[in-house]
Length: 128
Image (tube, rainbow, N blue to C red; front, side, top):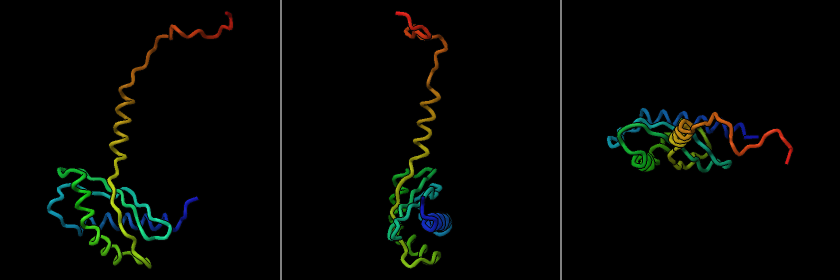
């Protein structure tokens, strides 16, 4: 069973960071829409894994690098908006789940099914 308190904190950090990135982070080098897809905080509330996705002209790796560079700014803004005893250190990661799911979907679309019976299958008979 997951800790309900941690889930609430994860949700609040996710929502608040998404808002801060969208409205207060001004980096002219980022020409992409950045969103926070998930947050996983440690039980001691010391660190948080923040998973981000981006869509736009700027390569995802560069967006991640820029967001990591603004980590101190984001943590400071987060500490003012969320009242926790300790504001967690933010570790940013790219969320590649959308690309992975698209890859799997394309693989499944390209599978061809045979409608003819298999010649090697001897079904229903126990005779030898």
